[in-house]
Amino acid sequence: MAFALAAAALLLAWPVLPGLRRLGPFKVFPPFRAWAVRPHPDAAVEVRTGRRLDARTSATDAVVVVRTAWRNQDSREARPSLRASRPLVPVVSVDGVPASWGWGATELTLTPGTHLVAVAGGHSRCYRQVALAAGERLELDYAGVLGDTADRFALPGELRDPVSFKERRRPGPVALYYLLLLGGVAAAAALTWTALASPGLLAAAPAAAITVGLGIGAAAIVAALRKQARLRRVAVAAPPAADDEPVVLDADEPARMAPAPGWAGLGLHLRHTLDRYPPEAVAALAGGKPNPLQRWRTVRIGEPAAPECRPWVPAPEVLLDGEPVATGWTRTWTQLAPGDHDLVVRIPQHPTQTGPATTVDLTRAEHRTRFHAAPGETTAIALHATVTAIPSPNGPHLASYSVALH
Image (cartoon, rainbow, N blue to C red; front, side):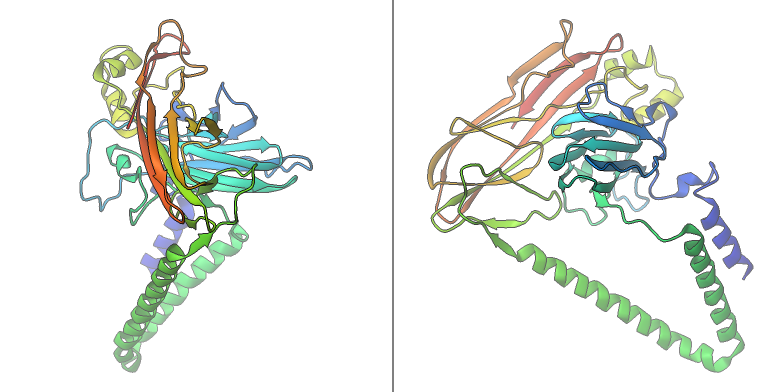
């Protein structure tokens, strides 16, 4: 009983005490103080940031709150690593333009309609297309892994994938939650004491445990079968209209789209990954040889000090048969007429962060292809951009910016 009460006290205290809050799986406070969330200088929408934000709503606008949090490298990681990671600081963007960077809560005030909200750190893994009405408020949670193993989550498929958007569902009153928790602990302790005191109950304990285990296993199997059925479901599209936009597919469970009779489909998956900072760039940001704390920061989040210029990657430009296609660092699906088509994808010159002293290399930032679209089928094209974006230690511009699209 004493052990159970001590465990309950620890669970109650970890969100409050600074020394214990790092035990939580979803840490909204920054791992290092200088990386607390703040508005991005290139933001094109109204932004509020902080650790905690009051639940503000608007009668004429829509509000989206994104909580960017972090998790430690999983203790069950098969390939742990202490090498320097890629830059992992989250950048929240709306419709391809950054709104904030750092760990914490970001409130975005948007016009009613459809928007693409995304978070990118070392890669462009996480996005969500939202359709919002006036007065609507949506809360999204994001958590990324710190350290070099974060690269494993650049693509979906991990069993413990922590970098997806999850819509936040508000719990009940905190006091009631903690009361139920303490009640559950006390009930478990009482049942254990009663079973030990009564030989009959003690003999029935293995059967009860087996029953509970079988029930949990059956529930897990049913959930897995339902997920597989959902993933196998095919959505047949209606014939396209002249003003149709591409369908943005979910990052984790992209819908299986089928074109309307007599039409074909194009599935386009565009993503980017940031390169690690080379040793000379780390030394320049550190102001010389990195000290032990700066080295630890580089291992954890990929940079020794918060740069004056927070790198971000502009949205790709896509042309289908010479016509622009509205997309981003996402999965999209578009209907098109059967036959041969020309596709051009290019990463543009950075609109704000390149200056006269920036070394720019965009010789490999364009991909051209000609493909044949068969009736009733979808042509899948996946492109990955490796981006080198190194901030200058002396000014609000990048020292170098280059893109290799393949």
